Amino acid sequence: MCGIIGYTGERSAGPLIMEALRRLEYRGYDSTGLALFDHGSSFFVARAAGKIDQLASRVEGRLPAAAAGIGHTRWATHGAATDANAHPHLDPSGRVAIVHNGIVENYEELRTALLARGRHFASDTDTEVLAHLIADALEAGRDLPAAVRDAVARTTGAYALVAIDRDEPGRLVAVRVGNAGGIVVGRGEREHFVASDLAALLPHTREVAFLEPGELADVRAAAASFCTLAGEPLDRPFEAQTLDPIAAVRGRYKHFMLKEIWEQPDGLLDAVRGRYLLAPAHVALEGFPFDAERVRQFTRVVLIGMGTSWHAAMVGRHYIERLARIPAEVDNAAEFGYRRAILDEHTLVISVSQSGETVDLLAAMEVARRAGCAQLTVCNTPGAQTTRVADGTIYMRMGPEIAVASTKCFTGAMVALHAIALHLGRARGTLDPAEAEAQVAGALHLPAAVGEALLLAPAIEQLAKRYAAYENFLFLGRGLSFPLALEGALKLKEVSYLHAEGYAAGEMKHGPIALIDERMPTVALAPSDELRDKMRSNIQQLKARRGRVVAIVSAGDASLSALADDMLTLPDTDQLLVPFVAAVVMQLLAYYVALERGCDVDQPRNLAKTVTVE
Ligand code: G6P
Image (cartoon, rainbow, N blue to C red; front, side, top):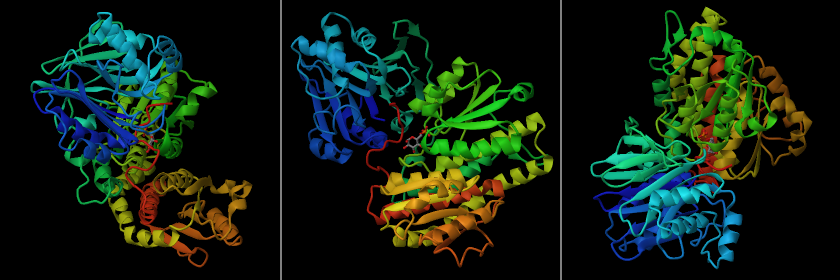
């Protein structure tokens, strides 16, 4: 949450920062702002509540020539989304300007102390105290890195910030405090960049260095140096990133969400290519860090994630249990730390995250690290924090995901988990060769199957027109379809602001059925697996209560046609791989309902793509 960009070099910083803010807007869009050194005696500062276009119209024709500056796009935590609360924040003398992502937990105490000294505050944010503290340390004779370290030492919380000092044009100091909010430093020709994530830097440089928690970057046009928050110098080499900047452009699609839904066949092709191999059927997993002996010692797998990644982890649990025959459990990462889970070095913890920066997930991984667990992470973002904490990373290979509502990284995470399950099963000798062959063949067919599922788009668009006026939805599924019901409901909530609940179909009679009448339709996932007949009974029960039912069924199954109000038929896949084609239907349904209701699909209200605050 909150996007950060900083630039120092020979180019004009203003337009560059504005362009980077557009790339970062998916991290938060409550307000945007920037501060530039403009060779005068004060910073040029512009801030605006709302999206980047508000700021763009405010600065049009006014951006001064500046060789350095900082910018911010905000997801509000402390203080409403107003101009006054927009970043950058300055100290009262206007010497220091900062942009910040995360939370200063003891800000009230610090603010009270500053108020008692007669200080005034221009905003309701926790951020502003940091500007005061840094300016105080500068006035006491410290240089900018030392002043930032002094200020940080007085705070509690987890955050990232970038500070600039009016008296030292061209110098940026960035810190990462705790696990919330990444900082990546980019190196160019006589120029350097600082950003909350790689997406902002891709058009300019591939040479990057990531800050770890507790580290500081001192950045000038010609060079960047690194140290710990205790001031000890660090040797931090810049590494080349291979992410494709073109992929982060919307192209002919109306929304990133639609583009990313349609990118799934290609993304899945990249994900299976070179990994799923036949004769004999097996999976080659680069990045898998454990040898067969270690794998045989695992007694349990714990999968953790948040949001859509949590739902993918739920599907992964089925794969691990069915294909690798290891007891597996799945937990919401934010809850994981609270239940004092019993963990040891024979527990394999698999974390799932598109961004690799989600703060609750990082906290859960820290719990696992302290317990000595083996750790594998499934991630889509090269070099992200989770990849640096885990023993090994299985990359989703889905390309940058920009829309706030995750789509292609849901299927990307599921296929990575499927591959891990096959790999574990083979290493432990628990995977039947015929099953391995069926699964490898099934996975290799996924790009085609998902491509076929996309052909349902026109039918789903029509369906969405008929259902968009309902205010409440129920999504039901059993077994592998239960996580899909949760994901279908989540997608609809996220992008169309409708009330939708996902339930295990067996649970329906224990409460949700009380809600059913002709005004609450149900999306019933009823593929032709061993649970189909039970789903059929549930659909009967809904119809008996005048509920409208959209049934999602497998190819060749007409048995529900007389019962359901509407039906969508999934393309043929192996039973274990039905979640992939069902996911496409859930995603398209949410997309077209949101479109019909005129919602802002790519930037739904109140949400952010990467959640870096608890
Ligand atoms: C946010 C996003 C979701 C995402 C979740 C977990 O809530 O809006 O789309 O599923 O974070 O993010 P991660 O990057 O860890 O997968």
